[in-house]
Length: 129
Image 1 (cartoon, rainbow, N blue to C red):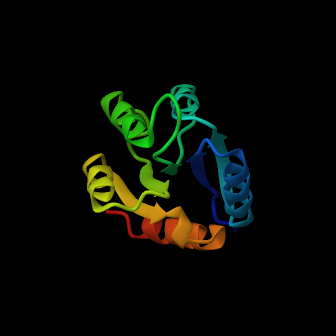
Image 2: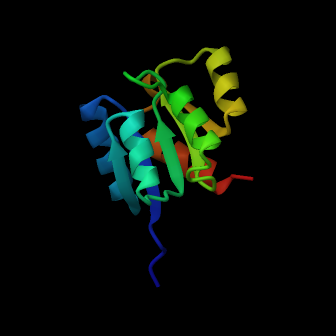
């Protein structure tokens, strides 16, 4: 019997990276949802998308990744999703802030290939709680 696909929401304003990550996750038995902005992601969550994992970039126009996490926490959207930051920012203060907002993982884009990002996300998901 085939394992049920995990649902993942990838949020990044970089269309090229969004497509690359969507492709890589779909190759690894994920059902992939994408959003080009935090606002678009929040709308998808409000419309009933309930991913197992949410990956979010920090630096985005209109609303950054931290603000998005605050909003989905405050509005109790997708409470059971594993939240992971995927950013080029690697400062400890950013990592600490993401943890305080409930993120279970923090991946620095420039240090990881897309395939390594998929591996790290799977590992974080398996080790949750």
